Length: 521
Image (cartoon, rainbow, N blue to C red; front, side):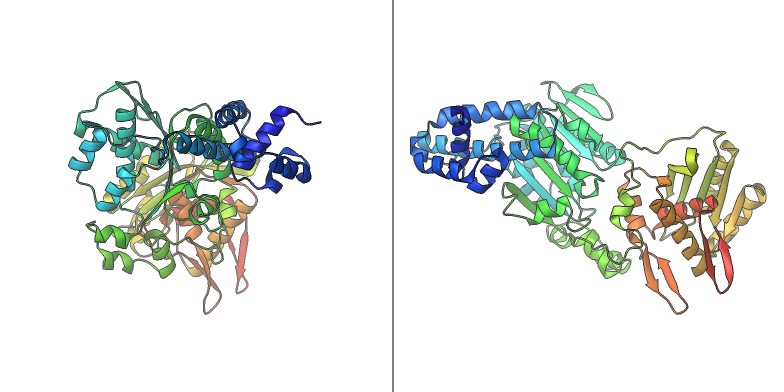
């Protein structure tokens, strides 16, 4: 015998267009029973207000539970039913379209001023005017979306008093967002009661936070949630299941924005599955759209630095495939620690380091691995020097070697790296070594690093630029064997990857043989 309360719940879900089979499966009720109840009751016979009250009560209870996948599914189903019932109630009372959940048209408000005075491009203004509760943005690199996102969050906090939470793919990106927010606040005369690098409190009490992604961060938060570079989260499903209760219970606003990454991942599904994620307002801005709106960008020079696949992903909003990459996305993510940060190790710690030399087109990169128990390593330092003069690079390396007395360093001495390598190895004879980047050595270093990833001997932070560099390495057929390299992109020539591969080559994990000769890494 089923309770009256359960029957009311089932009827509410039926009236919200939830399929009978889905209701029966989720609530573990016979499909025939659900169909019988459906015949006995029609939408007109329902007490809409009582149904809404019942659904909200259920939602409040579920929101306090641990965000398991089953709980999240139930919340999503009940939220959909609640939205339908509220639309029915509004039509019955007013016979007109319901108002958006946020009133953007605030007379004399910050948003109104921003639209007039911020000198935004058309695609930025369109985003700032978007009233939707759920928004998703697929964007090109370098078009200023983080810039306008910070302004939008400031407007919502200032005009509507709504808390704002930015979850970023990395701590560095979180700080960039907050720097934009500070810039907008200064421009429009907005002051804070509390002002730190990661949290700002407005005079009206609204809180704006920006943090590296963490599913625990969302739990208990009330307000609007921003998922920045969502495609690059190592575990986006945990984040998703954590924020669904928060959004459903308090009618918060959700904005997801990202450059494209892997196909068949959650961000790709959110973007492409209109039937399932019908509630999202879509914004797609590739580099061509941005340029038509007035963005200054040297298209021909930048495109010349890319192969077709990399250009399509970075600037044309095309999702990338995983087939030609030496390191699969799954393999890279298996060694990402979502809690890890770059840090300064103890000056007596045993460190192994690699330095990839660049000057004009390519950046220089210093990667440092810190030894842990069990033959494992953390990537603790990743310094990138862009267009640095060789004297500056030498000073940077000398400071590192002098401070860390047990560090060992391998440098790329190919081409422009020869003189720098000679100077460093001369000063630190027993601890520094030059390596020629021949095809065989690059193969040895790449396979050695891959083996470390496969054996989970290395841990890296969730750094999107590093992940992109690692994934960019391709295994290509050459005249005498396979070649391991990456096409140049706007951030360099996989400089972070080669620095890390040089560092990892100290670990002596793997031997590579070619032509009867062993290349010990």
